[in-house]
Image (tube, rainbow over all chains, first blue to last red; front, side, top):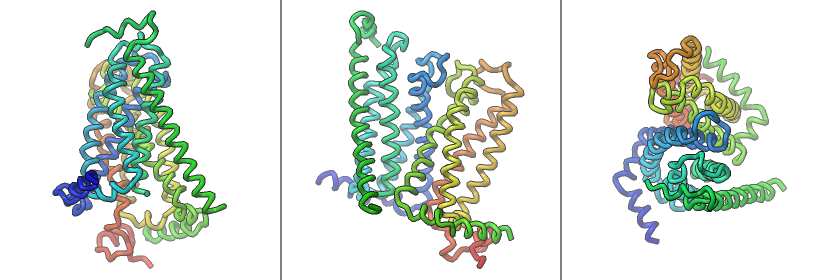
Length: 158
Length: 51
Length: 186
């Protein structure tokens, strides 16, 4: 039950109290969260659709992937920052919400996948890599980030 | 950056490629199972509600 | 007068059985709403990349018009899904949204963003070629891209605020809200 203690502490912390008390501020954080979700999704799709050969076939996929990754990192940073604030306001509710945990699992998977697997692979010359591996990575990436967003939306519904 | 993974050509897959293929396959399989379970859960619920 | 017309129309729309079924359906409404929100990643995701390219902040070594032309297709697909689900969501709860100050701001901002997009594409067509390989687009296009980022950010904010009930008509509201959304019409 240590984890629950942490969520109780988070909700009673200054951050949690601020998130609870100021509805307007909370809404702005949610909006920033959505804005960066759009940016993150855009950069993920840009890279993955290029790897799948749907977009920008005549632009080297290394170029597309490297450019997209820069903004992916910006989007991820805003998403994490605003996300912590959003959780803080309803921490105990989140603790008891199964979709919150699905989302966190998918998010942890997504981040680990990007930085430990996808980037080390895409840092190499894509011409020398097997196309089917690049395509599998793209499908896995779209699936994992879709899951993060979809389970995230469902936190509010369940 | 070392380029020891560039030996791919004849030996088939480099280490980075193998890791990428393995994790991608795992994510796709687990993701598919997760969504199938979710969809089936909803379908059962709707069947209970509307017959 | 206009508020009355809008409200009458919304009440008629909301009295349709399919509208009432939709708002009463947990899964159907949530799926449509989720589709609406998640498609932000396709529509605004692509748009942001185009805007950032014009501002010289990404893909600077790819011709700007190429970025625009290629990403337009997924962007328009995303937009079509968003506008369709958006209309359905309005149809599910027309009276409430008609009397929502945030919804009204959102519609105005959508129109502004639409005009900006139209002007942007006109300017892009008129200027085609000459600067394509430059990192930065000409000033007019940069302003259009920045406006696009700003306006769509405001649209997101208004969309998010629609879920908050501070200015709902079932609470006593001040003169401005009554004037702006017509809470006092009976």
